[in-house]
Length: 319
Length: 279
Image (cartoon, rainbow over all chains, first blue to last red; front, top):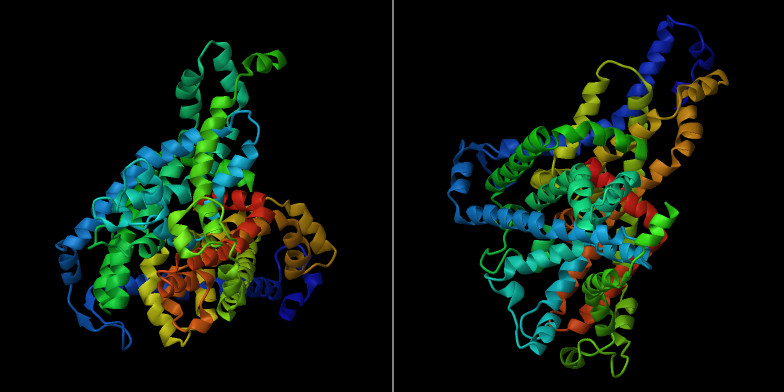
């Protein structure tokens, strides 16, 4: 850093700055920017490029860069694989469930906790808390609660004369997984909605009520449209997260029973680390990336188009 | 307006009923684990909810008395703290340059970093594993720290740049006239002023690192380097039939995260929701 202190007097001179000062500025910029840039290129950009590159090779991950070029074979194999088709199906199921059940539920709770009521701060803190716990804690906890036979959930249900295999049955594993996801993540979406609701001026709501709108009508025709940008962001986050879903599934089911809850990331880890088919696994990760990217671009272009400008500026103000 | 609110004041009982039902759904799993840790396994299967007939503390004290639990707490803490320092340090330097200097290629570099938001970590995990193995960083905390920091850069830089930009140029001019070097201005004036933004990004980095599972899973194979999530997963495998003991382990593993949440609730909620909506 001592090089930077060279000639502080000179900095004060009016432009055009002498060459030495300009060189000092360039050195400053380089010294400040390079550490972040090097780390980013080495551990983010380079691996992404390697993943792209490796996806067209047969490679076990050893011996430098891959050499056994096989063209699009990994992708052909992937697109004809039944497990991969299931991965996509599970993604669709979880996305639909999230958008149709989890997010409306979060929104309803957010609207509820936006009312004046005693203890609402406590409820907010409580509902958000699982989001702070790690996926592993959540996963292990629920794998015990939902264990078939004498898990806690079954002990409760038996009172009503019912029980379930939960995660152990291909027929119920996806709803069970979704239940756990809702427990962990709905509070997060609730907080986003609450923040969005607070950005709506109360005058608008009051004006509607003075005009005689009932609670539901006010919500449907005033609050909901004004929450549009917030809802669109929360859908976006939910989908992007689901495309990459790994930790919870890995802990809860490992993708089983017999691949009935497997996600793309689980399949990728399976082939990449357990079977050392890094080329094939890279093809999966490339598809995962392409899916995220295409979704993000299409969604931002067509769905969030009108929101982006406003969202950016209001966020800039908030932090 | 005053009498308006008075007139609208209504019975909040239905609201409470719904909130309490949701609250029960949230709390029951954790209370079950907390009480279950004080039971033995036969009681746990007969009496899942009630208070333990006899408070057995052995499950908790065994975990607390084992070196491996504390080793994992220490590893997680060390990795989270160093990750945060590296992420925030490097990001602050870069964000300072992006916010305060005009130079050729600035927008290009900045766009490169923002594009990083679009790179899901899972996509890069295989090449990262190969790279860390080549560099000899497997089973080394640095392997996890540097990777986490690299993936934390984009969001941190974006948030900090926004904040640095909002600080008026006059302050920098005044500092320069008083003989401040660029680094002096950054270190003694900009960073202290940016404390709220620094707190937000630090919270994001700490929680992200503390809860990270996928990266430690592939990087750490030796037990000595395990973080808490790895330890929990392993513990479940090891004591598969001893549910009460696993519940005690889970509860103890929750304490640091929930404690942090209790202390930094405002920053945590603000940071996590703002951080995600930006990403």
